[in-house]
Length: 137
Image (cartoon, rainbow, N blue to C red; front, top):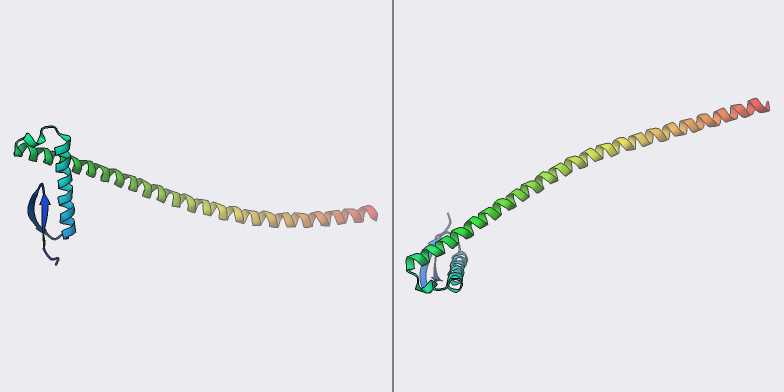
């Protein structure tokens, strides 16, 4: 069973103790992300600091939800791309196998035609020799 971890993090200028089964580095990463989003709100919205705390919290929550849904959509797009890639890869493998079978068939045909050609050349030589014998003699 995993060990529960606790870590002190700084979010919005206040220290919070987070605990769970993730690493301390993970907790710091989450806190850093939240601080970045808060900084974006402070620098991006005129008058943000004069807003009531519940409005600030709501704006932050909306931004986090927006990031979540955009990330989720991107993951779905990447999964669809991956599925397309896997399907194309599978199709290409089947096409490669079909081409290898066709190539083997063509090689067999070439060998068969070469043997037939040798046979015809031998037959031609025999016929020419027989014709020479008839003409000369």
